[in-house]
Image (cartoon, rainbow, N blue to C red; front, top):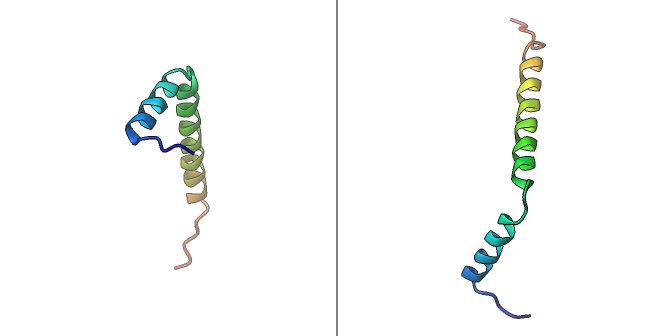
Length: 53
């Protein structure tokens, strides 16, 4: 197995990322969806907390 320098690896990774197309949009949509679900769950579960003072 041949050793690839870090600079060459980064260059190849950047060029591959540029060719992906809508991958970035899908990634952003998924991240926003997960964060929205977490915040909605937190907001809803917050209301079920009972104070037993």
